[in-house]
Length: 532
Image (cartoon, rainbow, N blue to C red; front, top):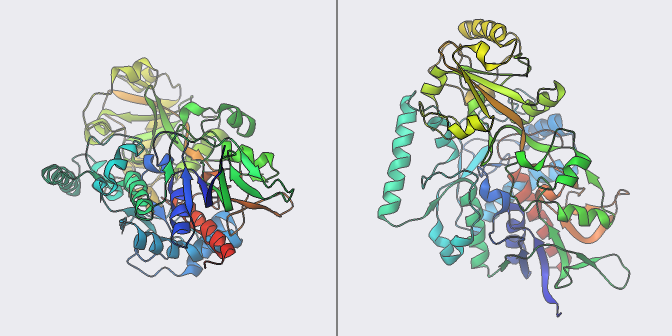
């Protein structure tokens, strides 16, 4: 077989890989993106599409790098990778906006996940892709990976979701819903194919590659990393077919759908059935890099979140945990966590307190008021959820089968009435309150459970993807345990060990670093070629 030669071969078509290829192309390098399956976008296309990058030009306020450094140091430690992310993230974003149709908007008031930590921001640093007309992709639009949850044609942004989760409880909920429906009507009238969230992000990056004439080859799984036959140890290609004159960028995702790797590296109970990551993420890039001597880190970690195990796939709980009239308990019916805590912390508490499964308990008033797992207020929960054991309903709390639940709810109701959770501090943080109900007083997160029937919904330790992988440096180069570089090999996104370490700075703290280190990998490759 003849080699197909490029300066840069990128493996994976999520945000990290597409950004790496885009950057390489605009710095004078030839590039190709290899995608394992028949659609591009990976987990990015399935995601909310939020991007967390401190100090970026979209934010409507000054955000000194010193504050962000203090924040990341508190959460993930200090190091050259953290500084590289903060220094180059804003430049990456400006580059992407200059070379794609993507535009971004600040998500008003979406706090950092730890706003009271040093350098944390209550107003938040998360930005969101503005709605994008998918027609910019032409025929390529049909090859965009499907979203995690169907929006039935509605174009919903992160800011929209916050208000729509409140059902009809707030004037802004009604206005937001009306705006979203009007957006759909206008799109249909003008024959637009409007995309939002991760769909918009993946599509916009792919549009940039189309303009730069960078191919994305679908149905091209990674099978090998090819070394220089001269014995230098340099990576020179992929699959014995694609020659990389400058280097290979692994952006092939995590290993969330690899049962063997999950059981090898992660604590039980664990499995592939609870993740919402792309089904193609089975860890080939990580495994191949490791076989060549690369160091691994954070393999026991994931971007955790309490999830409902439904027959059609897990549902990742976000707003549902913060809305008043609900609480989370273990199998005995006892609380063990601040229900509104960042989702990564909620799952860690599930493991620490042997609360797997846990149960999200709420009353009929909660169900009458709010959206739940995509269902409108008062809409009956599907019979198949009950049949699958994901939901239990009872005329009384005692009928839910959780021995201490009635006692727990009685105490919780006292906290709700006074507006202060004396056990776990739910609602104390501005982050807790973001997905609360502003019309619920005195605390938007706390409401008593009073109106039967009562519901208990099964929660398991789900995730958005794994966060452990190949150890890289501040230039995204893959390193051996002794700190030396495997020449020609780079990694970004969930194929690499996360710059966030064991924490999670804010919404989009997966995608922001993924794009930034894809960008940095390409810059390093271009510098090596003399193009920078």
